[in-house]
Every structure is written in C-alpha cells, then in structure tokens.
Length: 314
Image (cartoon, rainbow, N blue to C red; front, side, top):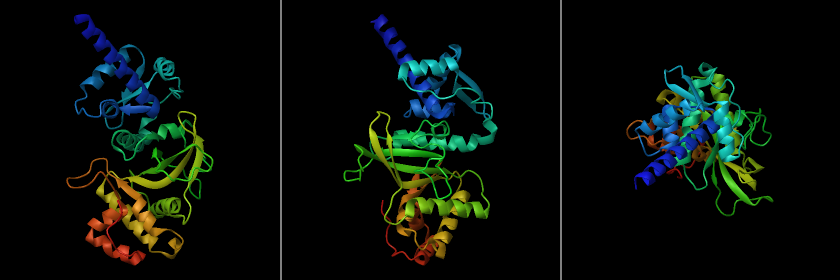
C-alpha cells in the first residue's frame, strides 16, 4: 500500500508538471496565480502550483522573472520546451527573450491571458479552446498576423480569439464541422477620443455587417477542416471608467449617420463586456444591451439609436 501511494503521488506530480508546461507553451509566460487558475481551477490555494514550479525550476525546465507589478512570472526554458514537445508532439513556440521585455506589454498581455483561462473553465458552449495573444503573435493559432479572413477594414486582428462548438445548421461551406469564434479586445488604458471611436467602429463593422458573418476555413487541432464563424466580440474592461467610456463612445457612434449600414441590434446583443474583477452584484460578462437595460441613464441612448426597446436577448 505504501509503494502504491508513493507511485500515485509521483504520477500526480508528473501530470501536474505536464499541465504547467502546457500552460506556459500556450501563453508564452504566466504569473503564478494564472498558472494556478489554469491547472487547478477549483483551488484558491496556490500551494500545488508553488510546489510544481519549484520542481520544474530545479529541473531546469522553467525560468522566472519579476513583472512590473512585482509578481513572479514563469516561462519555458529550451529544456522545458523539448519536454513539452516530447509529451504533446506539438510546437512549443519560441523560448528566447520571453521575459526580457515584460514592461512593454505586461498589463495588456496579462488581461488577455486571464480571459482565455476563464474561457477554458467557465465559458459558454462545448468544445471550448482559444488562441492566446501569444498564439496569434507566434502564428500558431487559427488567427495569424495579417490574417485576410479575421481582420477589420484596416487589417486589425483580435488580441485573442475564443472558440466553441457551433449549433447544428451552421453553414459549413465544404467543411466537416463548424466553430463559433469570439473576437477579444483588451481595453487597459485610456485611448484618445479618435482611437476610441476607431475601436468601436471596427468592432461594429466586424459584428454588424448585415447579412454576412466573418468566417474562415482552417484545420483544427485534430487536422479536420473546420469553418470558424465570428458571432460575438468581448471587450476586456478592468475598470468602471474604461467600461463607461467605451459604452458611451459606442452609443455615440451607433447614433451617427456613419452607422446607417450597421446591424445595430445585433451589435448591442453580441458585443460584450468582460470584467476581470466584477464588483458585488455585477456579472462577469454581459452584453452591451444587458448593461444598458440595467442602467437607466443609458436607456435614452438606446431609443435614439432607433431600437424597439425590450429586454435584451441572452
């Protein structure tokens, strides 16, 4: 019995190490709390994460640094990348200089990582997976840099993309299966007025093209040709101020003549806000329509947009 317990413990430790290696390969780097959320989603205590990371450091398979907020940030070493490739048979991506330039994009990347980890464990639909910002940047995802299919009018691509199974009846156009895609944008800093307006115009264009949906045919992780259809977008807003500013800018644009060809109701129901740390009584994610429905001061804007006011779809 004693030997069996030891063997089971070693197997658990090995499985934990492999999951941590997987998380770092998918995201490039993660802070400790994100590794804990990815591998141990039901545990608020990071003890197992700390023990696993200690072993991986001692084995030379992960390296670490300090984020600008003082958090400990981990990434794969070349040795860890080789172990990952041996286990999963997949490209682990580059390992050089992942922690060298953290200050430049740390907060933006951390928020993009947070929503992908949330989606993995708590998102809607079955068959969930994602392209992290690291996947997009290293051309290992469904979305790629300068993607001719998943881009706005001026060539903007998402910060990350979330996927789940599409309902029966989705147009396949010669593919064997279909997935729904959610376009993710991270709002972590105050844009000037022109850049904010440009963002809402681009998201409205992506979602609100009457009679069409942005889609792409590509091989999924099993090599099966799949139709990926963008059906909604999520804006990550870490503060109430950023959230209010975004919704006000969106409302102003949808009320303008420039938006006359946009499917406004579809945009309001399929453009959503995601809150990293919602206040008491706030949902983690909700559509702009749901948000306006809760806010009396924004209902007048909905009438000006020309919608027949009613409770939003869920």
